[in-house]
Length: 263
Ligand SMILES: C[S@@+](CC[C@H](N)C(=O)[O-])C[C@H]1O[C@@H](n2cnc3c(N)ncnc32)[C@H](O)[C@@H]1O
Image (tube, rainbow, N blue to C red; front, side):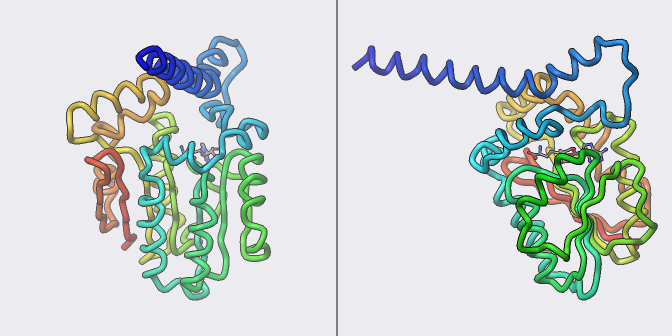
């Protein structure tokens, strides 16, 4: 019995280590290696291969894996955004999704926006493969959805073009100087009265969770830790002015949704 349990524990540790290694290699590890080359960077240099390589996108985009990465809070976070959209009158309005994300967030947001009356959904991402992949999940909404390759920090879209904008876990992946730019672009593209729904990581309350979360960021997503303090998106929106903001935290404070209404 003890040998059986030892074998199971060793196998589990091995599997978790292999998954961790896989994610490290195709996220931060790849950027570290890329940073060693003498080739100049561009506006896509911060994007991990798991978001740009089609094979990796298809391999990783598996709902239980994505839910586990967000500590099984994924459904809850998406539901909060969906409820916000459904409670808004979007009749004949346009909804923007700024950057793609894995799992069912995009189909759920698109459905909620169309149910609330929106007549057009724009999905913007800096990576064409992400748009192609998102499109593969949205077959039944063809004709209502437009896919645009664009940079969230310098969007080509017109001022006030959208009445709601959903940004799902984008900020923590952006270099610090681009986080504020993405937020001000989000504001520029919203019409007065429009709402920004921003889902992100947040500083957890319990020390143990904070230590685990800190370790996760240091290893995999070092650009995300600053959201806890010096690049707190709520503080930035308040400083920018012209917004009414509400923040709700989830899972002991580990995640947040900011709903910001543009004046
Ligand atoms: C939103 S984040 C990932 C969300 C979440 N971690 C998940 O599990 O899906 C990744 C997406 O952001 C996109 N992205 C990164 N930088 C961007 C930028 N400057 N403008 C638009 N999209 C960007 C990537 O191409 C990718 O599709």
